Amino acid sequence: MNVLGVNAVFHDPAAALVVDGEIVAAAEEERFSRRKHGKPPVAFSTWELPERAIAFCLAQADLHPDDVDLIAYSYDPDLAPAFDGATLAEGDWEGRRTLFVQRAPHFLATLGFDPGRVRFVSHHVAHAASAHLASPYATSAVLVADGRGERASSLLGRYDADGRLETLAVQELPHSLGLLYEELTAHLGFRRSSDEYKVMAMASYGMPRHVHRLARLVHVTGDGGFRTEPVDWTEFAPALSAGGDGWTREHADLAASVQHTAEGVLLELARWLHAHAGERRLTMAGGVALNCVANGRLLREGPFDDIWVQPAAGDSGTALGAALQIAADAGEPRAPMVTAALGRSWDDGELAAWLDGAGAAYERPDDIAVLVAQVLAADGVVAWFEGRSEFGPRGLGHRSLLADPRRAANLERLNNIKGREPFRPVAPMVLEEHAPAIFTGRHPSPHMLFVHEVAEAWRMRIPAVVHVDGTARVQTVDPHSEPLIARMLEAFRRLTGVPVVINTSLNTAGRPMVDDPRDAMECFGSAPIDLLAIGPFVVHRNRPPAAKHPATLERVA
Image (cartoon, rainbow, N blue to C red; front, side, top):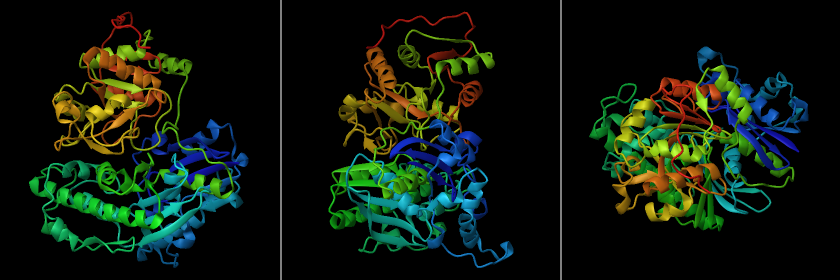
């Protein structure tokens, strides 16, 4: 059975394809349109479909629209506020969103699909399915938390071995951890539904001194729900202008207080869920599940033995979850998500043609892993473009910007290259076998979704990846699943004694992550990056065409 998943309602429009229960492809529309988050998260953009992401997913399996058996749309208009016929001037935006979703089958028909094959999946069920049905667990408790779905902001439940979801608790709007964080994001001068991770980073510079005051407004209710009453943010810190310029300790303290409060609510929800679901393992999705600081605390202090978070935990992941749920409901076999690399790729000949077309002076080294390790050890910055692009917001070694973590100045250097705020951290990529000695907590962590403390003995050795609070958002690398990246890390370890490199997503501020070769060359050409590693080829900055980079380290087995 061929099931196409579509997310188009709020933000991060995306498509995913599941064939006979196996995840074949998934991609966000922003990677094709080059428009961050695909579209604004407003009701009147609901009609827009992720057309290019859909076309890619079908092409990946050599399918046409009439080959698709079912289309899973990750929003159920029957659960949402009804359209009351009000004009736009009267402001029935939620009803208009519902109206557009009701007409989605007809919009899909314009792309050649049979509208009778469309199935609506509720937003939070799609999130839940993206967590459990993509996980390696046979059964699990599932926790979904985000800004909003049709009428709710969270779902707690349990999946059985047959892929059936038992819903244990739902939190109705207006109470929402995601919307609470969005409102703080806007108050601090950042873009809501986009820049919440900046607030999470700022929180590490403050102290949670307002938690007792906030506890009166934000708290659990003891039944799997919670309350988020309106907050007058100006009582805690003045509003900041766009971009967050001029933030002070007041703003950092407010960010820390909200972060700590949200973590506390999530911990209590996890404890309630553990007691009622009877499961040892937790799966998570929803935008709040991208809060890797909270995830790290859940892993350390929560009641579950293991936690698996969907790498595309935001709304893009609902395209995948909807497809997985419809496939499971149809009795299809289930195959876990073994990688987030579900996007586009190009073979060596195609990459060479791109480079030739751009007039680039490139070469093919004997071992690109060794060469990249040498450039990094010499304090070069490398744009790394290898294999299929990642699904979700993290660059996980397929579309990455790499640097040497031993030099503290590389944090500021990378933030300058990317045009980011100076308080933002960068992440370490580490060989899995070495992770326990360097980072506390449970491993592996292949999708960069948990924050761990950096061991004291290593903080001065890899200062560029140590955040102000002594933590790091870790990505572990398994040589079996990521052999090329692992060989590069091993080569770097041989050269430096450090099995860690800096890994941040390959993009600049305000732009989606690099996806195709043109994006990679534009990013390389417009930023002070020393080397572009693209497939088996490399492009050196300011290297004449005839020059060669000598190999000084034997090939890593």
